[in-house]
Amino acid sequence: MQQSRLNFFFLNIGHLFDHYFVLIFATVAALTLANDWQMSYAELIPYATPGFIAFGIFAIPAGWIADKWDRQHMMVIFFVGIGLSAIVTAMSQTPIQIGLGLFIIGGFAAIYHPVGLALVIEGHSKTGVILAVNGIWGNLGVGVAAAATGILIDFIGWRAAFIIPGILSVGTGIVYYFYNRRHPTQSRTTKNPIPNNNTGISPIQYKDKIAPIFAIIFFSSAIGGLTYQSTTFALPKIFDERLTELATSATSVGLLALLVFSIAAISQLIVGYFTDRFPIRYVFSCVALTQVIFLFSMQGLTDLSAFIVAVLMMMAVFGQIPINDVLVGRVTTDQWRSRVYAARYLVTFSAMAITLPLLAWFHNHWGFDGLFLVLSLAALAMLCAVLTLPNKGVVVGDRI
Image (cartoon, helix red, strand yellow):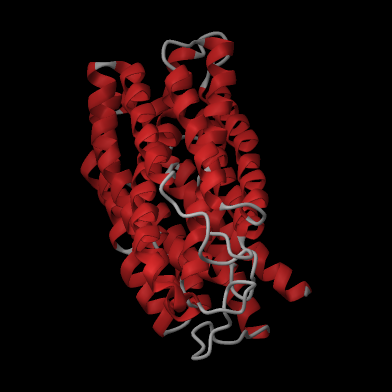
C-alpha cells in the first residue's frame, strides 16, 4: 500500500511538471520577452505553437510504445527528457530558437497523458476521484508555472524560469528510475486485463454504444482543449491588462494566477466524486452549462469583479478535465488504454495548438472580450453534444 501511494505521488508530480513546463513560456512571453525582444504579445504567441503541436502528435507514438514496452520506463524518459529540453530552451537567443526548444519540450510532455493516466487508473474500478486528484496536481502545475515563473523573472531572470524546474525534473526522473528498480511492478500490458468496471463485464461487450460515446469524447475534448488552452495560457496577460489595482509586478501577476488555478482545481475533485455516483451526462451537462455562463460573463470585467469571475470560470474549465478520462477508462481494456488516451489527447492538444494563433489574432483585433464570446459559444455547442449521451450503458451499475 505504501509503495502504491509513493508511486501515485510520483505520477502526480509528473502531471504537475507536465503542465508546468508547457506553460512557462506563457508567462515569460507576457511579462518579459515582449520588452526584451521588442516584440508584441501577439507576435510572440505563435512561437509556442510548435510545442503544442508536438504535445499532440507525439502522444500517439508514446502511447503505442508504452503499451508494447514499459510504462514506468517511459515515465523516466518523460522526467529526464522534459527537464533537459527546458534547460536547452533557456539558452535561446532568438524567437526561432525558443520555438524549437518549446517543440522539444512538447515532444517529451506528450508522454505523460497516455502513459501516466493509464498507470493512475491501473487496477481501479471507480476512477473518478483518483483521476480528479491527479488532475488537481496537473492544474497546480498550471498555477505554479505562472507563480514560479513570475518570481524567477523578478529575482533572477527569464532563463532561470526554464533552468531551475529543468534540474528538478531531471532529478525526479533519476529518483523514479531507482525507485522502480527497487520496487518492480507487474507489466501493465497483461493479456488478461481486469475489467475496469464494477459490473464484471468487459467493455468490449458494449460495441454498439462505444462509437457515439467516443464521438462525444473527441468533440468535447477538442472544445475543452480550445477553452483550457485559451484561458490558462492567456490568464497572466488578462490579469496584467485588467487587474491594474491588484497586479503591479510579474510576481503579483503570477501569484494571483496561482491562487485562481489552485482554487479552481478543487472543482476536479468535486466532479470526480459525482462521476463515481451519478450518470456522467448529468454531471457533464452541469459543467458545460457553467462554462457557458462564466465565459460569457468575463466580458468587460476588471479588477476585483474580473478576479472573482475568473475563479468561477476556471473552476468550470478545470471541472471538465476528469470527465473525458473517466469515460475513456470505462470503455477501454487495459491493453488498449494508453493508445486510446493518446488518441483523445491528440485531439485535445491539436486543438490547443490551433488555439495559439487564434488567441494572438483575437487579442490583436478584438481583445479578450471577443475571445470570451467565442469560447462561450463553443461551450454551448459542447453542452448540446453532451446532452445526447445515453443514461444507461457502461459501469457504475448500469449508468455511463
